[in-house]
Length: 292
Image (cartoon, rainbow, N blue to C red):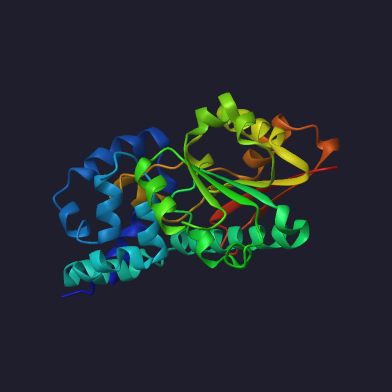
């Protein structure tokens, strides 16, 4: 019998090649064919694939899915209860390039928050949009040492808001129930921030909404404040498996797409802007710093 990790490695590579080769319309037509194939059950033994496929919270890419990707203690019991095949599959899926990139993204956010707190002192204010479980705050020295005025975590999932409220009680973290629409319609009520970020949101936003949100976030920045948004990159090798077996579709972007959002949102003379890849080129970052 073949090792489950080897089976899934070959499947992912085959799906990636197929997705790259065929016309997007053909690929769209193939997705339900794959999803209705009896082989699906085998791969659903992987707790990460199953959670993504079944969408227990009713939407794609929720915070618990990220916990599986982060190998967070929060999901350790669920992983321990998986079948032997499921555990073997998970040992592979948790380390595919997009998952490695997600963990790097989490740590990059922590670093940004800590650097901004060091630069701005104890009055530093941070806003996370679509915060999920705010796992990046777990490793923040600034938060642990009480060097932040507030870290507002906005999310539209009441379960995520409740978890943040419980986990970060007595810290500078404030969890708020709210969505992109909340920010667009009454962002001003949240106040002003030194650092605003949306790390797992733009992958679901069409260009025009992304531009509206970017403009609003820039208005909510203090002078010299920083806005960061992240997006999975085109050419991401797990997309074939993710869109079929995981039932999870992301809007992948190129460097040019990221610049299109930035250029449509700002007067480039009033900001410092950069777009860069994460280490394995699976995630793109757009960072905009407001000049004084």
